[in-house]
Amino acid sequence: MNPDSKASLQFRDYFVENINFDRPLGHISDGKLNLSTDFTHKSQLNEEENQARVVLGVNIYPEKEEDLFSISLKLVGFFDIEVAELEKDEIQQLITLNATAILFPYLRSLVSQITMAANLPEPIILPTMNIGRMIEQQIEHE
Image 1 (cartoon, rainbow, N blue to C red):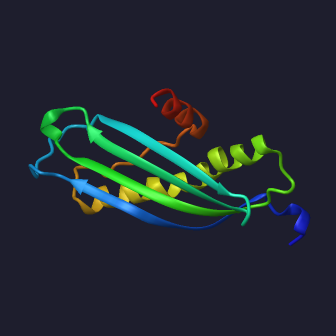
Image 2: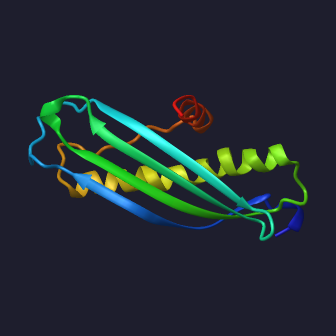
């Protein structure tokens, strides 16, 4: 591989920090679920080691009381970043937008797997997201 073609952000690894699925009544109506989702995002840069740590979370719950259940899930991703070549705002964009976009498919897949294993009428498949807009909304609600 040509070293010049290597991206400034390299995904190293991730782990699941927390998974919680709660279905206290054991009943969900047969109809289509209307869901509310709240996403959280936090990033931290360690410039000395050229590494970033990104936490991406989601809380999912239905809008109708008779469909009582909830899911919360939090992933932590680790990235190597070439900070010497980048300006501060470029570094922040990489770890805020790009690293979150890299982690999102893992979060999405886990939600589907959990809800399939929980025997919901249909597994929950989170839609693809505009990560920039998702982060803007989170900042607006803080």
